[in-house]
Amino acid sequence: MVLDLQKKEVEKAVLVGLARSTKDRLDVEESLDELAELAFSANAEVIGKKIQVKQKPNPALYVGTGFVEQIKEMLSENDGNTVIFDDTLSPAQQRNLEKALECKVIDRPILILDIFATRARTAGSRLQVELAQLEYTLPRLTGAWTHFSKQYGGIGAKGPGETQLEIDRRQVRTKISQLKNRLKKLDIQRATQRKRRQDLFKVALVGYTNAGKSTLFNVLTKAEVRVKNMLFTTLDSTTRVMSTGYPSVTVFSDTVGFIKKLPHQLVESFKSTLEEVALANLLLHVVDCSEDNYAERIRHTREILREIGAEKVPYLLVYNKIDKVPDFLPDNEISAKSFSLSAVKKTGIKQLQAEIILHSDNYSLKR
Image (cartoon, rainbow, N blue to C red; front, side, top):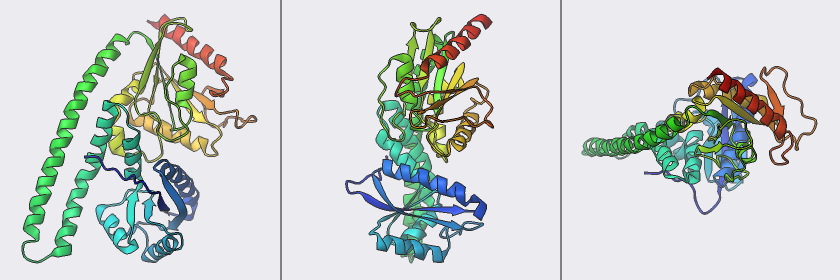
């Protein structure tokens, strides 16, 4: 069961965010800019953005009723047909909003899940995405059938609704169990591969999606990992063992990119893939320094590294894309050894390689 929101025709979307105070508005604006990139990646056209400053979400509509009318007006003026909320909506909120706005309403998690579904290439990544989608859907089945009962009411509505709900729940749970078993088999294969590499020096590239990790990976390893200027090009952990160019055998791993408000279900389902990061001896935290909010993205990446148990792995900050900002100066408040380079132009690579070799030598000495 894969939720596929992609259509042949371009969807025209209004993006909606909620700021808890006027101080939070700037953060929400940045988050909506990122949401716009996600929408573009899903082949949607962004026709407008709306932010409401409200201390608490409306239990029924997430935003206020008057604000819903403003969104409806923007949709009407721009022939819009979709509204994407930056935060997770409850099943009831989603239903109520679709009824009030008379169009499709989705939230950030399902948008990201949909992008992952279209980007998944290997059997492993497809299984992981499908598992995340099903686990996101399961708790929402209750709301769907409650809505059925309320909509039709009367004699017989409650019984069949509950019966169908239990059937659906059972089917989804069975499918989840099957996917987990299949992923366990893949995990055993990965564990066997890792065991063969356990004495080797392991370097993992991490960072925000579209920061240039795969391009840098290709330069460091002379590999040919697919590179594209879009979010989540890489979903599978690509590993290359280097026996030349480095004093000792070194394993490089390119990993899935991170993003703000990454759905918990995705982090959970991709944990086995992300173990490459937690088990690394050195992380190259790749940052797109041409982004205005790069410092905030560094913090988000560190948060996800903590979530997957990789916060104590030694790391280097790699400021990539300096060809776009030749006068770039790193943020002094970020205390980590850093390197500025351009993976595309292959400038500044030798200094980074020298540091990797230094870490590799120290690792060999300790063993």
